[in-house]
Image 1: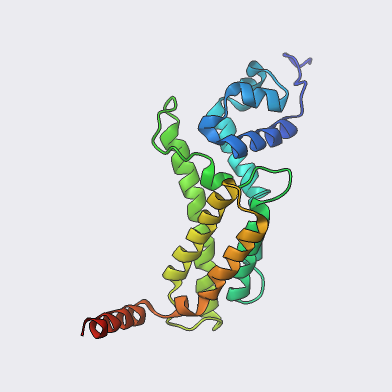
Image 2: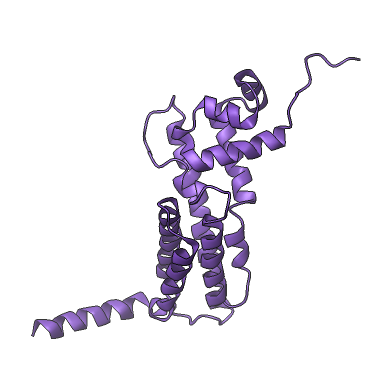
Length: 221
């Protein structure tokens, strides 16, 4: 029995990879349909037929980006000690954020910076999508550090939550710096500076706060 309809005249996977470049470079709101169809080499009807809508295309793009361009930092978490893993994640991220021939910065951080902006009703859902993806990075970091505590690599009183929040913030900040033109050397320097605070961040929160309060009282005298 013959199949009805015309076969696709383009490679869907290749078109999706081209869409990654557009959304990564311009963000969801900054990428027009004309930008997308031109880069993907297809017309609007073909885009809608293959992907459904701009928002549906973006969701597929996010999945592909996370599995490819955004995966190097997560892979580094499996290396060596916790300190080596976090350092490797920061350095791999710095290299990925400044790769030649690619948009600089992280699409998951920068893909939709205008949270809450009206966009045909898709905005809140896409904000939630990217927020959830960023949350996975937090969970990856937290899980790696908790495993290090369980294995005795980190002391039982290590401030896992503080470490997680700090290094996640460094990662997101590096993305912004990369988009603003920071060089790979600068980002690698930031990574090393962040690791210089490792020992201080390992201290339990209560101990850190106690020291801070004691110092304040002393200085007040």
